[in-house]
Amino acid sequence: MSDVDDPPAEAADETLPPIAVVVVADPDGDGERTVHGLLAQTVRPVSITLVTTGGPTAGGGPTAGGGPTAGEAPTVHQARSPGGAGSSGDTAPPVRVVRCAHEDLGPACVDAVRSARAPYVAVLRGGDEALPHWLWHLSRAARDGGGNGAGPVGLVQCGTLRLREDGLVDGFALPSTSTRAWPSPADLLEGAYAVRRELLDSDGGTASWVAVPMLLVRRRAGATGNPAVALAPGARVAGRTRLVRHGYRLPAAGPRNGSVPRLVSVVVPVRNGAGTLAAQLTALAQQTGAVAYEVLVVDNGSTDATREVAERARAELPGLRIVDASDRAGESRARNRGIAAAHGDFIAFCDADDVADPGWLAAMAEAAKEADLVGGGLETSVLSPGHADEQPLPMDAQTDFLPFARGANSGAWKDVLTSMGGWDERYRGGGEDMDLSWRAQLCGYLVRYAGDARMHYRLRGDLRSLARQKWNYGRSGAQLYAAYRRAGFERRDGRVVVMNWCWLLLHVPDLARSPVLRRRWIRYGARLAGFLAGSARRGVRYL
Image (tube, rainbow, N blue to C red):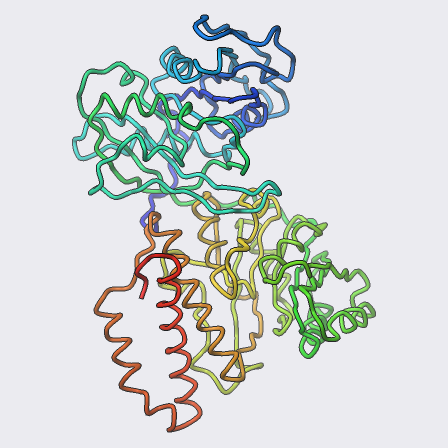
């Protein structure tokens, strides 16, 4: 994933192969949301065909009757394209509605792909929402993704982002990029894809199957209908053509449009933080620079005087709001509640036990001009001066799978957070910030580091809470590996694992030598133990 090409010049996009789209709306004909998303694509489809058993057309008007019965020929209607999408002066692609009996949806979908007037045809389920650059990536992969003399690209597949009914993330599915595994029709179940139209009726031959390790389609929970219907064209191509799997070199994400946040909403999740919250709120009240902002203290079920501390801070922060998130414990839960309550178009996140530098917000707002998600720097010398060896690495020095913004000092545009489903509430105690940043990049968003957006960071003081934190970090590492291994996240080399455990055993005497050495041993030991526990729970080997 880190191996990317430069963004192609605008003129190069003129060489991208055209793509038509078929939407299978089963069983109730709901495809309006999907069609609106297609009209907002950066690369417009040649045409849109909605295959349905009846109900409203893509333009919202009724259709006559209840649709053909089994065995009857499908009926075809030309529908008016919904307005309001795309740039001024663009010509909207034609939208065609094909109605058929429920049991004929599969053949009707194949026929719709066969009759499309484009070399490639992408297929979506009704209710799917394609991100604006979905077709651009599919078309680019169809043009460039073959290689190695494997013939033309026969099938392109991307990942899907699964959302709960409330719009929050509930996981995702990525296509396998392994060239060792032989692709089969079953591999299409979770993704969205495009096929080369001429291969629908081919008799043998070889073509490339390109896996795009990106999350380019939003799919909400509770979707009805038989998913095999939308897979019919892809399964037909996979059954008639020898497909050879190939990877895809991702282009670098482009910068945002340079706009300045209208209002920054600072979200501070807190649970029993009465002892430290006042210092953070005072620091937020003393921010410099001409940045309009509001502060939201999100109480995640505090039983101490946290709310009273926040109320007293209104003297310094008149617009401060207290948001309740006591129904479920977890920082991600609190942050999502903050996003929902925020009035700003850019959301900045910080913790209740840290202290923001006076220029923190101004630096975050400046970085937001060109980035979708921003990560600032954490500095421990003020709040934890005795632990210089635990200073977190800056984002531009990270060696992980992809760079990530730490949750204690991060920010993102609200529309970006909403489109990718917010913070994943399944991560508890760690890993949620890595997931958010990595998921953003797999959705095609730009993540950047703002080193001058400094946050004074407080390390865990007592050994019990330190051990619990590192244990949770280790468990989340296995959870992240289970989620992102198909995107290129690799586990540590076996020799490194052996060396780490040998070091831990050899340094057991450190527990009795000095407080500094004892703390170091507990940090490492708890994290390695967390790797073991997380691996057992997730059914993976991440040690």
